[in-house]
Image (cartoon, rainbow, N blue to C red; front, side, top):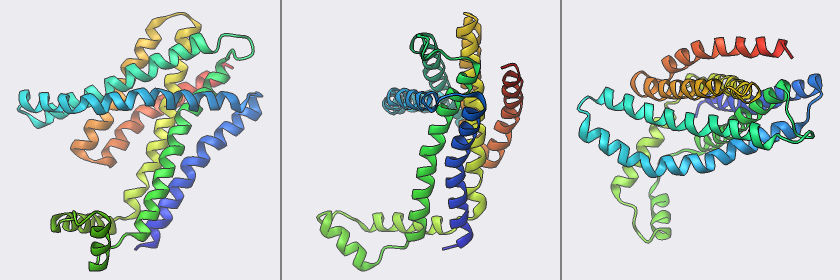
Length: 269
């Protein structure tokens, strides 16, 4: 057990919670907004995933089998699968944002301006960051307590599971524990950059969709779907083929102009 790894887990987990909440608090005070808008963003983000995740879980296996049986190149197959994942994310999240802006925020009490849309996007990306932070902190606890199974552990588990734990199960578990033991802080820290990038991108897409509703121009919604598809496709494909560090670098190149767009739009408010 490495204390620097535990510190990294703690640092990343806390900041993934504090950053979206802190930025939202600043925005709420400065623009005189309500935490309800952040809450609506968080709520609808979760509701979308309630439908999105089961659909992915149910259809990704047939898609993988189709690709494996029809695409001989593993890289091409992975690219097609990444495109499938990215497209599903785009067509679920962006039209959902559009429908929420068009039909939920309709009465005068709930009607949003651009500042509200910005906070809504923070809620959308922020709740994702907070939930992932919970997983990070849970991983830290698992890391602290991780140890190979002893004979006593195996005996206790077999009594609970009616003797169904095989030698292969024990071997696989102990290999996983050994792999976890090799973690370094550099394996944990990129997760924080990933969340910062993701929050920035969620706000960017939110402002695009808000513009689509406000100006009654579907081209901005279509643009948001296309960009979301591209972003998630790159995230899945590059990570699978080249690893997390190159993935975060490429996604950062996309997030930087998105950040400046957000900044530019914020100055117009």
